[in-house]
Length: 494
Image 1: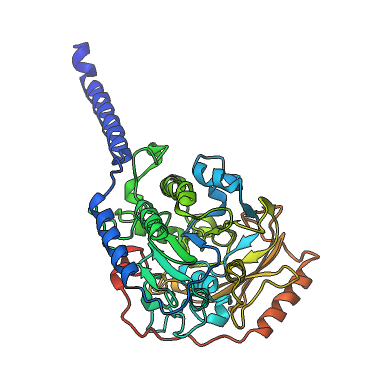
Image 2 (image 1 turned 45 degrees about the vertical axis):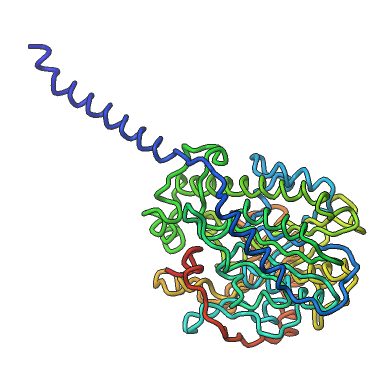
């Protein structure tokens, strides 16, 4: 009788234990990561494609006898997620080791918060307001404004000086030739690179570094300008066994491509509601991609001496922008001008660059001049430079069309905003009248705006002077079809 009395309670307990076990099994199943396997078929296709393109690249002038110049852009890579900049998780051991022999810039900031404007500034030496390659308002029929055809670029100047110019870009969305960034390159591999067998649309770091070694090792005369773009930290993130260090944090449904991704991102950006478990999942996935990229980048950096890139040559490594992982109620990038997307790494190795830390304020447009100076080539016409006052200017023009077309987000993002940084002070101004001031030394994450600090009038005057001195360039029209499939793969359109 006693057993019968407790039978319902025992059944309930058994059910709860089974449910708990089921939940645990679900979480463990959610945390399982596939083993990364090299896609040798993709490697072979890449090798054949690059060999063909190098063979047909026109050479009608004397080859340059200057040093090789290698420029590596780590797409979507936050400065604060790298060990050499203080991150306490093991994400970048190979990069950190290489950095010991490099000039490491601590105050480098992006010209824009996403790929197109930052690369355009890197290639033209101009701010986005001047080169015009940036976002467009909601009412525009375009996805964005390209770099105008015929623009003077670093690659064009080096090519005219006799350099072989080769670009290998993994970001097939906004480094596709339709956006004008391939101007001046003898070889530009991007949209031709096929998806992998596992469905990965954009080439992963293993493919980029193998093609880079092939390009540098190919027979040639004179100097080479090699531009590389690694895309791995950009969404969608690809989980791999060994690179995800805390798999129990991963909630696959909350990641890009998962059923809860869009709902979670919209909740944060529209309603300002944070879910710590979701943010932790994004952070773990993001870090895992940096680990994978770092390992592959290390293979390339270790191989450079055997490929002829030695202490007499130049290597620039930088990011085009960072990534929001919930900070400021933001996800991804291309939406605003806070430090998480603007404060990015820059490292240089080569003659004249003594290893060590450097606090000089620089931006992408400054790197254009640094590249040409390394090659001994005259600078670009009308190139900008960071003001002697040290004020860095970063510009955000609207956001990706996917966000602007969302009624819950359009009001927030259909605007132009600029960050004026005179370290340690930051002033963010919007053409909609918005204004925020921060002390970056005391508040590097810009979590608490300061009201009427003593330094604000001076930085406000500098911002007004900069804006008065720059007339916006009209946005150009794309003259070739845009690769919508590539934009969709990286989340720029639905």
